[in-house]
Image (cartoon, rainbow over all chains, first blue to last red; front, side, top):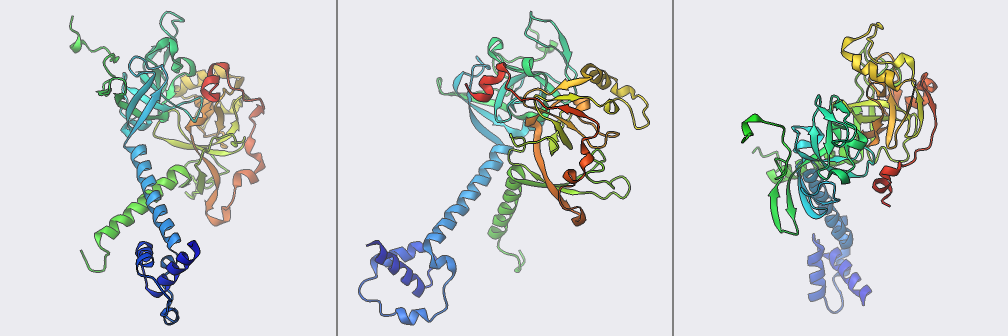
Length: 224
Length: 212
């Protein structure tokens, strides 16, 4: 059954210069019946374009073209504008849940542009190049920070040029700058500007670091 | 719109395809850039400071710092001291290797050998690392071929593989320099000695890297 139908399609296409395979298929299924007398006459005409002669090639070409276009658009949007990622791991608890929180990332802050102390950033991990990590910035170049958790070594370091110091909110359960040292700003890919919690089913802004956000001391905001 | 121009839809589609393809290819597959500066003399752009002639190099950008990265490869990387900048250097050692530092490459001196006050901290850090450095896991040691003028790992220490954005495929232009001059010229390694080691995942990062 399949072979005669295919040959009918091919012959119909050879006769009429049909641009779309879908019209060819429709004609083949509805109109075509009985012996095909016009075929000899039709074949003397110049051949139609290649894509019209091979409907499956044509369909593949269209699907491929739209697929590549969609992939390119998606890449540009997700790499240079915004993306929505599912976070996993308890290093940023309680600001971000250990699982089930979607993060809205703004790529305007890539390469550390406009990143400030207190922001939550997403960066390519300096130890494993195929991993991305989310932590909070606690110091920018020139600042002096405690190298380890409070009440451990008490050693202070100064952040070198072009680096920042990132630490997770869940201090005992986070592997961060306390282990790998200052993070080059070139590894920063995005800033987390919002989250969608699937347990509470609501959006919340993290643009200023969230509710428990850490801000540098500002006497104007001092209530006491 | 003049009659000889295609309608705006065709123009918009053309602009989309050209821009999208250029960005997609640049981000994932291939980048072609001229080499500016003298830190890689005499391997790349050897006449840069006399005639201004530049070599144009093609960069492989699909997972450039994967397990097939070798000692002696040329890489383009985002500079650790400036997030917006990028530079070209040679991979001298991989993670686990021990680098015996070359005294000529001690930073903090200008081209006449006079100490530079602005780089006192860098020189102090180098003295703290000397005489040898073990490159940590996931990092590489990068150095320029021109030891007189090169800001490299001797300044900022081992560089993370995550910062590497491209690996050199070959010189594209000018045609008489076509190929891989960094492999032809055998004297690349300079005086820096490297003791090869095994790159083992540290215990504290096993869960991250191996997913165990």
